Every structure is written in C-alpha cells, then in structure tokens.
Length: 382
Image (tube, rainbow, N blue to C red; front, side):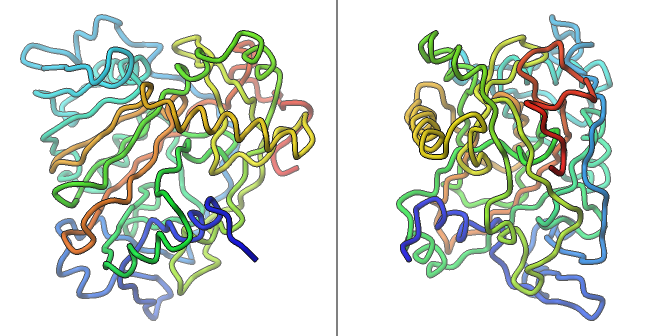
C-alpha cells in the first residue's frame, strides 16, 4: 500500500536518533558513548515508563503579557539591541540575559513575543543554569506541559528534548518516501489548552543547517478574502495525535505514555487574547477534519489552506542555531518547522523545549477562560 508523503514524514521524522539502552530499572537512557560525547549531559534524553501524570485539563490562564508595560522599560534597557528580522515578524535581541529578568521583565518579554511573534536571543546562559532552573523559569508563563511520550532529561519530565545524532544512512532513509522535511505545524494542538510562550534552546548543533522556520498565522488569515475569512470563522476542527503517535517513543518502549490523550475540537479561527486579532488555527500534523464538513470537503479545504501556509514565504522567518541561542515564540500565532538539511556526519543536533500552556482557543473572547465552553457541544474525552 503506498505511503503518503505526510504519513512517511510522521513515520520517519522522529525527534530522537541515538544509541539507547533499556536499563534494569526500565528507564531508557542514551548509551555510555552518547553520554561521553554530549556537551550537556544533564539534558540527555530518557524515557521512564513509571512516570505517570493525569491528563492536562482546563485551567484558567492569566496571560503575563496583559500585565506588561508596553514601553518595555524592564526588558529593553540601556545597551540592549533589537533588530527586526522582517517588518512584521520576528526580532533578534542582543545585550540581554533572559536569566536576569525580573517578573516585570518577564511580563514585557511575553508582550513583545506576542507582538513580534518570535524573538531570537544570542549568547545566553539559560541552559547553563540547569534543567531545574529552566523548568522554574517556564512556570512563570503558564502551567508546564508534560508530553505524553517524548524524551525528557532524567528527573525533569517538563522538558522536551530533541536529539539527533544521525548517520548518513539515516538521512538517506528519511528521504526514501518523502520529498521534504518541512511540515509547518503548531505544537500540541491535540491538547485542550495548547502552548503559548515557548522556549527552545540549543545545546549542540551543526555549524550550518538544521534551522527552524516560522510562519505567521495572523498574516496568512489576513490575506484571505473577506468571504473566506467569514466562512472559516464559523468552523471547528478535530485535533489529534498522528496515527503513529508512538513515533515520539524509543524503539524499546513503543507504548510509553505518561498520560492519556483525547481528541479535541478547536475553532478553525481563534482570537488572540493579547493582540485581539484572528489567527488561522489549523495545521497539517495534528488537524484531522473540519467538523461541519464532509471528509472530502474538509480534505480539499484543508489542503488549500496548507498550500497557502507553505507558500507564504513572505510571511516567514528563519532562525539559525548558533551556540547560546534561545528562541522564544508565541505558539498561538506561529507555525514552525524544523529543516532536516544539516551535515549528518558533522555534529549532534541537541535542543530542549520548555512549553508553558496557554488558554483554550476560542473563536470569540467572550468565551475566554470559560470552563463551560465546548465548541459545538464537544467535551474533552468525547
């Protein structure tokens, strides 16, 4: 049976390629060889099948950006340099240490991230302060997400690890069934409350390649015709894990699951609570079907929208991973995609993500933080 390009990507684009061992305690860890080579041993991936958490459920979300001073006096202090990547999207910031921000500075960080979409910080000591520190830092911006199956540093389940120590044959195999590694998506939209302000930091990376692309879902929605905007604003979509959700797990523990995952329904167009703008809220990795349409209709409409997302190069920016880089983005308004183009023999690609959850997506802010809001009668777990 032929494998579609997207199915091939889901099957092959694991976030982990490494030598792994299942130890006597059942925990899967990287091999002694990997540990010896790692620059940041405390952040190496592991899976503990004994770790169990309740599913993420509704919590009222208080956005720190709504407390921020819009003139950014605690963030953009003397000596800080900020350069726009494009006029509408993304900024690179130098002369600032994220670790030195007080609460007022963190509020302003949230607001600037919402306004610019993605911020790139260079020469940071963020990860040097250890896994426990970056977990605590992330908690200021929301309840931290525990991924149901992806790797985490041992003892720190709130950190998501990306670790690729690839060989040339792995790279060649990846493209046997697909034409591209770029699949724009929004993180964890299979959760009731997906993430908002997201922190992604480099630990080790090739000298070139392996960049991350970001696309602006606000700009993309604004470019659609008013009639299509109005039509989409009344629709809802099912979001769920890919059929091979176990791809997040290592081979020795295919069925690892820290908590249950249920399909959820989100509006196709959400309203950003800080910017008060409409955001196209579908992605080809986790969106399954538009509820109000028949499947062929849904497939056709989603395919068109995905084509718009993919082709909107003038609504995208690219982050490259120099040592000490931390990227902060607003997952509510941005798509992103990793680029699998780096020299497979050159270096390991090792990153960590801290993922604070935000509000439940709503099509109208009158429903914001309403525990009784269920789109078109849906309820979690149903």
